[in-house]
Length: 81
Image (cartoon, rainbow, N blue to C red):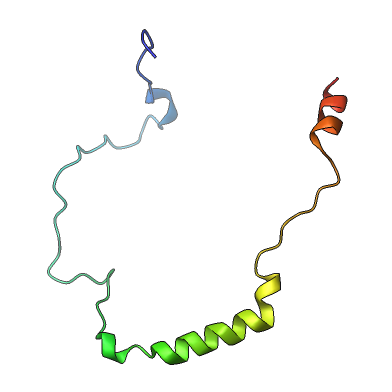
């Protein structure tokens, strides 16, 4: 897309919003509480798999519902005129 002006986001921010900070290197803390690194041997994989299998067998059909519309493209075009 040649000849297009850059996007101006100036009107999207409040007048009293603090100025943005430049992106830079992220300073990491001594301790990272957002990520966990558990001992792999402590994860009960077999139990998790069994419980997931039971849950899917019990409620799997209802986990994701898909709407069944009785309207097709021809009806939409008809209504748009």
